[in-house]
Length: 426
Image 1 (cartoon, helix red, strand yellow):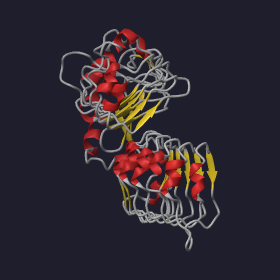
Image 2 (cartoon, helix red, strand yellow):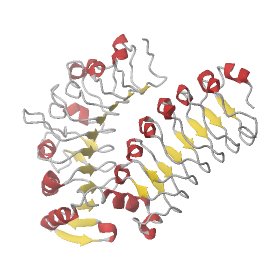
Image 3 (cartoon, helix red, strand yellow):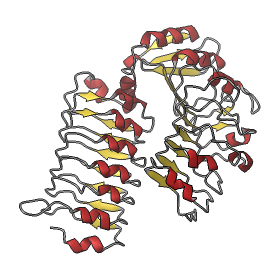
Image 4 (cartoon, one colour):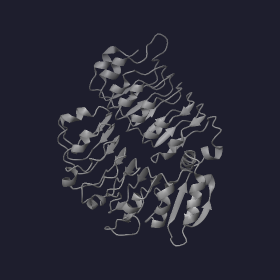
């Protein structure tokens, strides 16, 4: 058993209890006091024991970055896991889990999740809210996978082998993850015919495996790919240098998700210069666009229109690591048509303080997640304190010196992240 006195080791940062008999016979599982006392622990290894549960107060371990619980007899993950703001790696393989709590969707730092060889019946949509790089759910009893997982643009490896999945062909399960994700996206809607028709209108159509559609325009050398059945344009890290206006005309009426991250897009992304508003005009015409990912490019033109037209349907946008796009902001109203947005990433984008301090983020009252690292911010933008739906706020690597008392009004917040480079006082 774990001695009660261990919970008083408040400065402990790493604890390895693996390969013991915790939970066996009369030995109790881990006590709640362990989680509430060891608040500075960053790594906890309790693998290869006989634990049947984890402490209900697990969420008190807010600095925990790596939790290894493999090879136990754990039947459920406490809902309080949503409080583990720093958790990046969670290993639960070879246990007896029947479900994953929806609260896992609020662990904004989670990158690796191993739930292999358990008794899971399904992968729920809440997992799509986590920026996972690796999800191992192999060797379970899974018969249903939420198609929303197909929209996880950060997911590099999804492992589902060894499950009784009849809706996904084996060659897709065993193939590249990008093809598996494309297959899941295709289940989000039955609009494949609309997408194919739009592709045909743009140029010569080649239909490949898993309904991937590749368009080679008769007048442009650019390659545009529509994958899946719901109008999802995915060209992440494909070396794309521009997206012609003709492609945006297709996006305007039929596409819900556009991922053009990690490419060579410059200027306005459409072939125009820094002063061109072609991209903003094109986005303004998109009647169904919910997700726009433009991170990791070299844009110098702002992608959103800021006129008096009705709000865009846009729910999520990333402009991270476009170093020059902040210079295109010449008015505080650049988000005037983005009031529906719930997730925004401006990391690496520096916008003049006179606009940030003058209500730049004011229209974004519906934000659930805001990420703005390396933005040269000297204070938390005033508008943030009025985002009452906010759950995750990440402003690391800035020059913020004060967190005002009004932060207590953000009652939905589960995660606030500043790096050691900020000297924050409350």
